[in-house]
Image 1 (cartoon, rainbow over the protein chains, first blue to last red):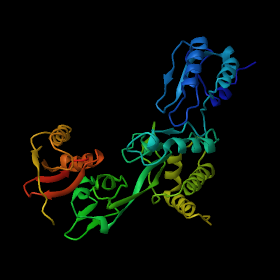
Image 2 (spheres, rainbow over the protein chains, first blue to last red):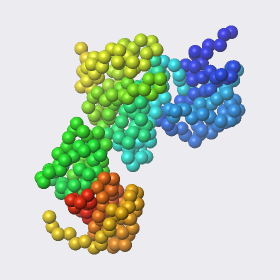
Image 3 (spheres, one colour):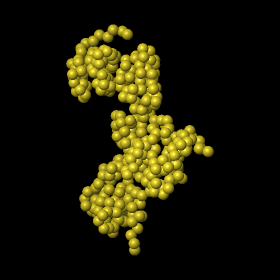
Length: 290
Length: 80
């Protein structure tokens, strides 16, 4: 019987140069694996592979040199050890994330919990081409949000509290964007220049800046053959519910408009950003685009 | 603005990050709790980062003054 390489690839078994050998992609969410999962992976790699794993560029783990005849056994043993296999092909790929606010002092949003929710909702969903989500906790952008088809970045919506301010001058100096200007009586915030990094909030000695966390979403990033930075077309999103409504709409747009094998960015450029932006704004507001 | 009584002073304009913060911290170590240190620091990275680092360490930043010569004076009250 002919080997269905496509089905194997869809299920994370990546064909190697070496005949009848596969590099098995595992499911990783937000870059976290438990010690128990690591032990299972180590065991499988020794038993069926060559005793090593490859860490992919997107926080994935692959076990190379799995033999065709072992595929089903490997799948079963991984599953019983609590390790899922990954995916490839035209669908939603590994959801990547930095450690975020649960661990990182700079983190503004809980990237780990969000990565789980995003993965739960979209991982493996078939689309015209691959689709990558990346979630980064703050403006430091360790996870490079804008190189993903849909990037999510934590940011602060900041507000000056005049009553608490002593005009000490620290915030205007802490701002790297030159968005703050201090006069004799007040601090002026230029929202066009503000990148929502929250340095003013963190630097202020008197709690005269309030920062509410939110999501900055970028669309159409890609960093392969074509290199293009994802674009932020919406204001900062405050609610997770709104974030998912927007993500649903973006994937739906991609599904309806892209040709088979066409990346999100290419489809956006071909169809023009205006229509897409209208749909995203409608999703952001909570209504239909019609 | 009320007069602030300064207990000690340190000049960190002769060093670069991260030694700026280290030098300021060493000067603070010498002080008693709630005493006030005056720190002279340069524009750019030091003035962007040192006040924030002081806050993160739990010290109270009282005032930042532009000296008009490319340097600033930061007054910090040592944490209890």
